[in-house]
Length: 83
Image (cartoon, rainbow, N blue to C red; front, side, top):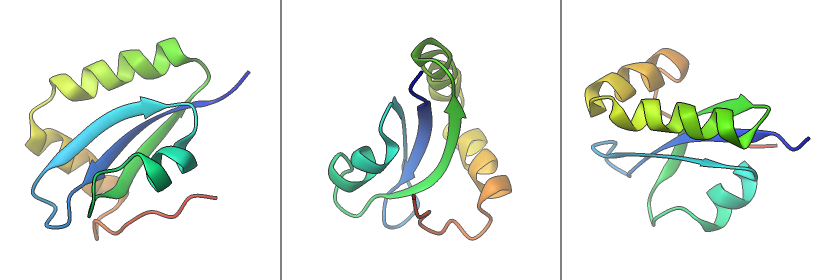
């Protein structure tokens, strides 16, 4: 079964976060991100249903809560490399 990913992207100034899910994180980050946005955080799931559920949870959070989650995983808010 193909893994699914929930991701959080940050704009260049790290003032805006975008949350989504995909089955191909590398392709999404290479072709599907707005200009200047970077992958800051991701989680891996076994099914699309699990990923979609988690995406919904994160999207319902205040942006400050999502930023705190990202900061625990990636304190420097640096662009993550995939692969």
